[in-house]
Length: 159
Image (cartoon, rainbow, N blue to C red; front, side, top):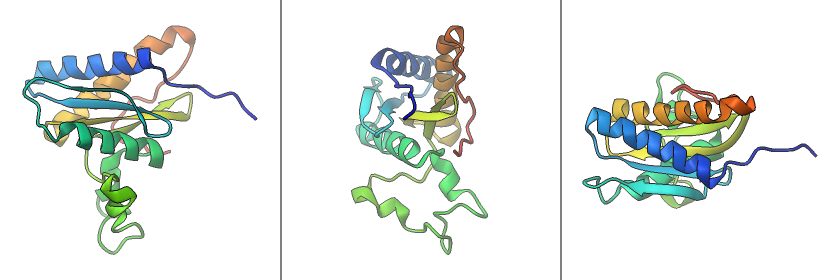
């Protein structure tokens, strides 16, 4: 057995706050969901004016990123994205009763080389969702740095 790191509510809320700060900065109302390693929500917040569909979409993206240990947009990135037509995982988005998201906006949360959860964003275009997600990962890195933990802060994550 090995010890593991657990994402807790305080860190999840810190990430949501950072994503929302970034969304205000770029002027787009977002929904942000942070899940644990099992894909269950720790924190979910829909900004005023954000789409009503945002909470489910953000959760789906976070669930997929945590469970499959990769940024969700990598499933459809040409030429070898596994969910593209003709590739090995084509149709995977219909798995888990349609909860599997294969488009931009979901990122695994990787601390000390271990996936401890995921973050999903819905409300902007791909570039905006990515900017808010990376801002949240950066905020977690800054929060955990004094404890000598390392958070993977980038858009393209595949473990």
